[in-house]
Length: 100
Image 1 (cartoon, rainbow, N blue to C red):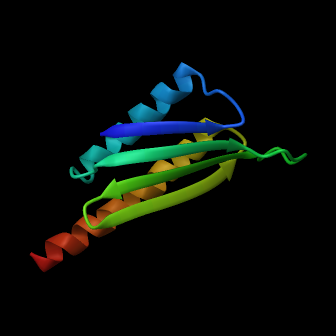
Image 2 (cartoon, one colour):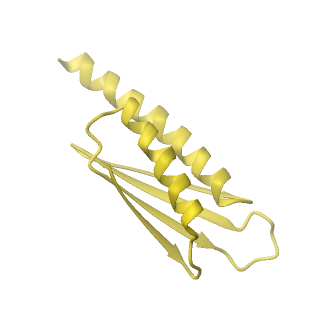
């Protein structure tokens, strides 16, 4: 799966990009027809400690899935987003199998 990572107002280091790639590659176990993933990393200028936002847009046949989370660390956000996408992909696959 092709993963596009865009970081807004900062440069993401290679370790973070590799981490994101590994996490998103695991989604292929749940749904094998994923076309690509767009990942947007943003930092908010606020005094709050949870100022890191991750948004993942997953393109699959028949539509797109979008998840957005805000946490203290980008790794934590990516974990939560991938977990949410896992549940959505499992539901989507069950619906597709029910119609077949």
